[in-house]
Length: 84
Image 1 (tube, one colour):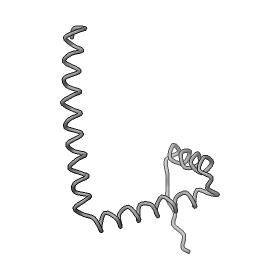
Image 2 (cartoon, helix red, strand yellow; image 1 turned 90 degrees about the vertical axis):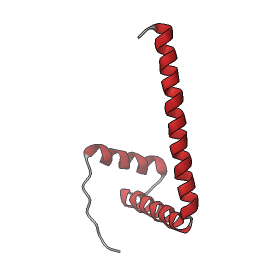
Image 3 (cartoon, helix red, strand yellow; image 1 turned 45 degrees about the vertical axis):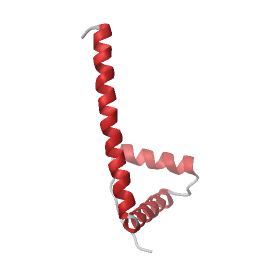
């Protein structure tokens, strides 16, 4: 194995320490290794299924657009009911 040195803001350090305690990891090192492994797996799957990933991204964009339309409508109705 090799070493890598990273610098984190205090808030991220605290977050990592909390995840180690809650997640049953033996160390921050183990937690970070697991995160990197999961990212590698995800990216590997994306490479194997580019059409599926493109479809999922398109669906996410459509969901965002639908949300915006509904949120705008609700805001208009709220303003009409309670006043601007």
